Length: 131
Image (tube, rainbow, N blue to C red; front, side, top):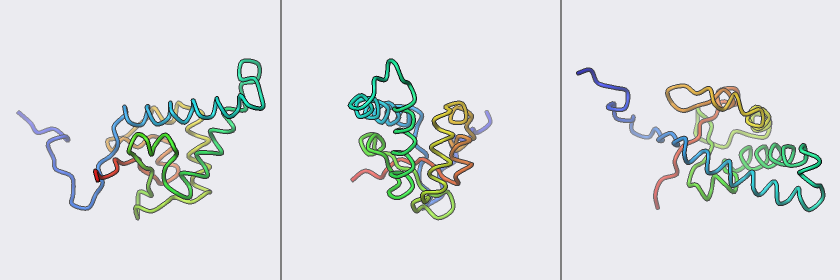
């Protein structure tokens, strides 16, 4: 029987990619927060764009500067630079957030679980180490 990619141990120091379930939970938490906040100044059932714009702004700011949105923090994952493991910055954060809002790029993933939005931004969503 041939070995699968899952049988290969991760290289030391290389973080483990976050699972799809954790990523979905984080996105749902962030989306509910955006709906609640946008509901304070607009009716999401009549105007659909305020929560989407808020999601893009929150993702750009929090991921670009801190590597985590509130939902990611609760799901115990973070978004890091693929090359150096640091925060990705506001520019790549904006690119990632806009592509995430389109949803389809996030569904097209490679072997490391990096969607098109992560590859375009040079980022990777990883599990946070247990404390």
